[in-house]
Length: 510
Figure 1 (cartoon, one colour):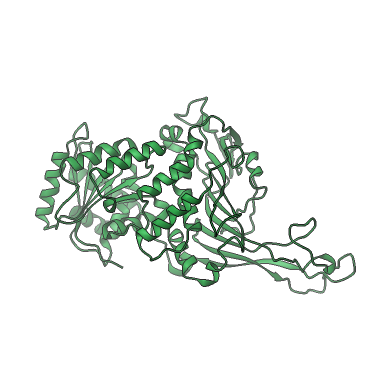
Figure 2 (tube, rainbow, N blue to C red; figure 1 turned 90 degrees about the vertical axis):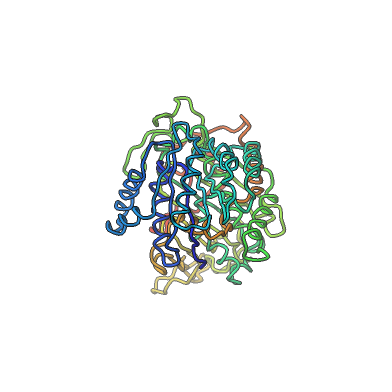
């Protein structure tokens, strides 16, 4: 694992929730790790008139609440954390520049800098331009800028944002972060596929019947309603998280395990996806009041800051077709939404049945797909959350207890049972690192593999642009606590949903 070189990590929007909940804990873990150099520092910046001590106290509370030892937390915050106010307008880049130079001089830093934009999307381009105009886009060491999703709101805005970024930063300096790509199971998709000949030999249209991707949330919009109602689920989840999973499942082997080679194959997948048929391939929904577990919850329109007549989608089901040699004829299904029965992110790969099903009532073989022919498919379940891991379902003969059933001809019917082989990351390796910790490590070590390239962003928006600029898509209501609107069943009548903590659960759209 590459060591972490001395650097200054500058966080724009340092007073915000993301910094407190995710960035500070991840940076603490990184800078406490064995491979981290001693001289790595964090400079928070925002409009708020905070001091170093104010920033440190907020960080202390966040780290203490996470269970870290008080003495270690206090020492780290005092030694590593600093803050610089950007003024009421948030534009005092000169004061920030002076503080950067002073800190680098005081701590003998070589000029390595990472600028993390934990900001509203509207502030990305202006902030990048201020950095460029001040000459902070280059230094004696390395300089990198990190941008949170969303990367634009449609194709045109994404292209404009990329153009403004590239006026000041080269593409190899830009890290577009999607925290889903930091999850261990997502990263392991590459190892699972390309490091195991057993599965790679099956990963094609001859052996796979369909692929399902489920990203379910049991929560509503919470305090994000102001943003979410302007965005909707297509922009908030599908264009980024979902599409990243799709490309990783479907991509071809890269020429090398290097960032550009991997990202090039992901772009090829996007280019091969057929245009979505608005009427046939897309179902949108919006949750109404219902129950999630034992808790009664309001409908989307009853949430705070949501207009009474909002038509913003909180659910999307889609069917993709990939027109290439590997995947022609294999549908990829996606289902994602808020206020669904459980929190679950899972990829289900259903393999084709055997050409002839031998174990049938009466002992007569039959052809799967024909009326009355029963044949349970083999399935691979890749679970990203909760309890990250893999499950492989297959059929075995049930033990003979002397009570075997007989078919209509009097022949004994062999009883089969579905079993599964399971692998849990936490059971095998202990606690799984937080996705942000993984991604921040990659930023400061210069590994762009898990970050989104400019043409990848634009290719994804190209796919969804027609959906975002049409009035032809109805938004169907669904009751909170169900698997989305009834209309989703026209894409796929039975969806695979199996949380790892309860393998017996299988749910269908309601």
